[in-house]
Amino acid sequence: MPSKKKLFISLSHLFQKNTYLLAGLAFFVCVAAALSVWFFARGLTSRESAVVSSENIVLENTEGVCPFRRALDGVCVSSQEDAYPLLVAVMIENHWDARPLSGIHEASVVYEAPVEANFSRFLAIFPANAESEKVGPVRSARPYYVDWLREYGTPLYMHVGGSQDALDRIEAWGVHDLNEFYRGWYYWRDDGRFAPHNVYTSSKLWNTAFADYDAFAATSTFDGWSFGAMSPCDELTDSLASCADVFTTTFNGSVYEAIWRYATSTNQYERYQVEGKQTDEGGNPILADTVVVQFVTTTVLDAIGRLGMETVGEGRAVVFRDGRMIEGVWKKQSASDRTEWRDTNGDVIPLNPGKIWIEVLNQHGSLSFGKNEE
Image (cartoon, rainbow, N blue to C red; front, side):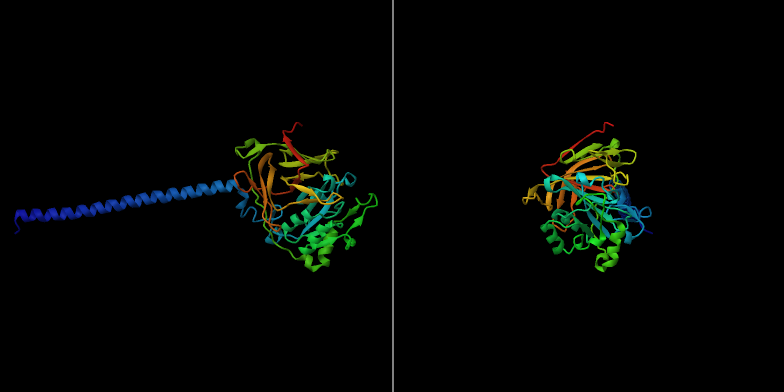
């Protein structure tokens, strides 16, 4: 039988070992609890970040609601094929004698830029399946419009002649060219208008061209712009934007001045010119979901007054959407790259899905803005 002293020593050793074991178990439990809290908090933070991101660019994640968006204008479509339809680009003039215009209200994207004497002219881009019985008056090409056209893959380009520089670029870049000078059967002249303001085409005629020329019917993909939702201007909390529900772009006096008024009921901009609210020949109003104003510098190239414009580089831009005015810059890295618009923080400015107008103003044009008094 062990002595009391030996028994005490044995029990002391056993207690000491169990103390180490219990301490180790307690440490393990504390570490496990801390890790659980950390992973839970991390997961919650990630989910909260995802919610913030989806609110900023809410249209980026719309599976089940809108599985496909058309690259041209962000409009919801039903299939991947519809996201990249055949495209048609038509040069449409804005001369006083050409008004009212026809079919331009159907265009998804419209560029308005200065030509000779700082008159403005349009490059209107349509999905080929847009239905329009009359589009025009169609006028001649200029090189900077061809530069913008190149951003959309290989659209069909409809025009009546053009400057030599524009024609050279069309040939060099393999543009699907439907020049009226050589393919006049895809156009007609309206006897009720004086030349040269009387050339028109239609969706039926450009789709006939696609059927006649297999090469024209090859679709190509391109990078679409960023599209996203924003709160209305009266809920504005973004320090990078201001409220402006009416603005004016001027090219050459009041005759070539466009006034855009924001309508809260439709969340669209209505276009006015010197004649009043602008409608096409069929009485359809000219509307836009986003209007981008892009500032460039031009030079006069010849005695006729044709302009040279640098479309590659960067400069000031202002984006109007949802009653907001967002200051920023435009950037285009090369002739084949897409133009993008970024805010003063360097972030891409998302556009509203729908009709997009790009107003290109040179040093002789002007932009003014304010509150709608009507």
